[in-house]
Structures are given as structure tokens and as C-alpha cells.
Image 1 (cartoon, one colour):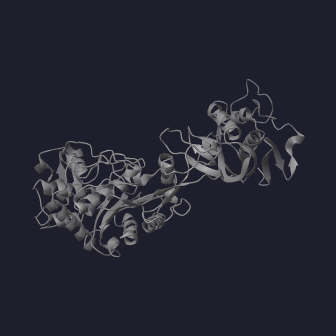
Image 2 (image 1 turned 180 degrees about the vertical axis):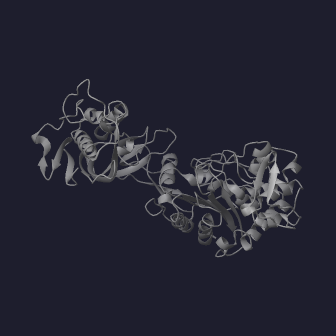
Length: 545
């Protein structure tokens, strides 16, 4: 396909232009109505079905025909050039009928393998209001499984890169007024300045737009396939009056979080104020799409030892200064556990094993609890894990299922069936520091009167003091020393790494506190906790403490 080719829709009717000359000089539908791979209008019944990879010529020809058909406004023909006409046709039709695109110029770029990128410069019009709209997307050409024809691999992203299965493009009066989100000090929070807040601000608008007192404008948006999910605004034709919505976020901490996660391809971080539960920062890389920081579900590695240590202390099975055995390996119920590089700690204490992240020391104490469900109870009753948190947006509140045998042992060191994310680990650290669980919140509960989760009891004062002292030692001379060196004030930390199936390198986890701020981060395939996630947490603590 020549880079100079353009597909234009004028006055609601598409036409194709190459170098300024219209394809209208001949039938743009040639070869599209059931034609063969050679572009003819019929195929011999005995013709052999082609196999193997699509060729460069087939990629060029198929992409060109698809864009011509789409540009001509013939969704039926365009859909037949895809490998899923049933789903493609309504989406292609909706581009004009529901999204109200009245003209567009599509400029393809050179193919890269089987992918053909292109840019779209369009105009959206609704009830006398019009506005330009530009974006880029791409299509992929594949060989049909049954026909052998080269076809466009259908995906909603062919229409728009952020469109997903089940969602649709709409233009009209917005279902909810826009919001002007501000931090706890009244500073403006926009998705342009803080990209990670994009999905969160969309969710807040969807839930609180009317309560914030604004009026709706005319917009183009992606309507979520999930009735409870937020719509995503793509273009604003006319602005309504936004309602002002105060959040608990802190602009300084948020800015630091956005910068810190960008250093890694897959990273997330959350900061929480221990004394109140106020969420001060949420950031993800990538910034758009799934909110991993608050909805992720992964094993947290040795950061979970905060809860395990609290359990052992509250049961009287160990104390911070008590001598604890830390051998290179330990076996429980036929399952062998080991320390990193098979290290051991002669004559160590619980604090030493915590600060250096000795797995075997914690494994060897499991039998003494006399209760396989003890860790699950501690996590729920003291740290508020799994209590249906109502933060203001959708979250995953962590899970510590009851387990037995070797699976229960794995949970003690944050492996196995435990599921956490940056939000829940930041909250666990905040609870250890504060002594009482304060459910994280993103907007004040007075806005909607939603119920706020409360744990059934506080952490015992002795356990709270001992756990936070062990975290202080971890930050001072343990595995968190390097990462926390630049953080001032009263500070503590815990590192962790968690192996994930299919990954060559473990996930890096880190959680810490500085004064009245707790933060946690996870970096996918980041290795050991202090290596990658540690600096992310430190950056947020420095900015927000």
C-alpha cells in the first residue's frame, strides 16, 4: 500500500483518494463480494485453498480493499473482508450511525510484517455541533482458516485503539456531567498531567458526576461493555459545567508516583495515610487500561511477612528479640522451602530473619500455631483484607484463603494462593504502623454515605510496636537499606519477591512507611524487592511525607 493513499468520507459518504484522484473512476467494490484471492469475482469450486503465511502483496491488497469498503460506508462488504463478519459489521456501521462521524481521512503507513498502521483525521457532528477528531490505529492481515483468503483479523481496536470487545463508540449528550477533580489541597488533577489517573477519573465521574453538581455536555465516548464500568470520553464537542470533586490524593505524591513507575514496563504503586486511610497516590505503567495498582491479584512474596510476624507475636510464639532458627532450607508437609542463595543466619532473632527476609525461620514456626486458618483470620480480623472495601472506585481488597499443608506454609511467606496488589500491601503497612485498620478511601464517605469497612479488632500495641520496629531495622540495615537511604523521618520497610508461572524473573515487591505515609509497589519481572520496587516506593515517600 502506498503511503500516499488516503481514504476519505465526505458529507457522510465515503470516497477513496490516491494522490488527489478519486477511485470513483471505477467500482470500489471490485473483488469484494465473495471474490477470490486473485481479486476476481468468482472462485472455481475445485480451486485449492491457500495455506501458509500471507504474502506482502496479499497484505497490501487486503488492507486496501478493507479500507476502501469501510471508507465507502459499506459495513457489510468491509465486514466480509474480516475473519469475524458477525462482530465487525455492527461496529463498522456504528462508526457513522452511533459515533456520528461525518467525514474522515484515513492515511495508511507502510506495512510492518502483517500489520498495517494508519492515522484517522475525522469530524464528529451531532445536533449542529462539530469537532475534529484524530487518532491512530492498525490492522493485521491473516489467512482465513477455512477459505484460505487473506482477511483482516477483526478486533474492535481496528476502529479505535481503545475500543474493546463488547464496548461501542457513541456520540451524544453525556450520561453524566464531567468533573473537576482536585487533591486534598484543592489542586487540579487531570489525566493529561497525571496519566495514571485517567481510568480512575473516568470511574469517579461515572459514579459521582451528578453528585458533584455539574451539567452534561456533548461528547464522543466508549460505552463500557460492563454496566458497572465507567465510560471513557474520547472527544468533547461542547463542554458542560463540570462539578468539583475533592479527592484524598496529593498532587506532589501523585507526580512522584507517575515519574517513578515510568522507569519500568509493568509497575504500580499506591500510597496511603495510616492515620486516616486516605489514598495519596495511585500510579500504573502502562497508565491506561487495567488499574493494576488497585485491582491486581498477585502473590506478594515476603512483604506478607508483616502479617505473619504480627500473627506469631500475637500468639506468643515469637518476639522481635527472640532467637529464631534460620537454616538454608526447611521442609513442611513434604514441601521444601529455601532462602535466597541458600543463606542461613546463625544465632539470629526474629528481627534478623525479618530484616534479611529469611523464609525458613517463618516456615519452622507454622506447626506452633495449631491452626491452619490462623493467617487468614489475622489478615481479615486485624488487617481488613477481603472486607469489601468501598474506596470510591472498584478495587480488589486482597485474598488470603484458608489453606492446609504445604499450601498453608507457602502463604506464610507470601506465596501460594494469596492475592494482593499495591493498594492492599500499602494498607497492610499502614495498619501495622497505625495499629488499627483504616479502610483506604479515595473520596470522602460523606459524598455518598457508602459503608466503610472496619476490622473486628486492632493489632495489639505490643505487636504493632514490634512489627514496625522490625520494619525500621529492615530499612536501616536489612534488605530495604539501599532503597530507603534517601527517605527521611521515622521510616520502615519490607521487601519481597514472588515467582509467577511463565515469567523468567520474579516480581519485585516493596512496602514501606515514612512518618504518616505508607506506600507499596510491585514491578513485574523486577527481580528482588529492593532492586526495582524499592526505589519506586522511596520516591513516593520522599514526595509525600
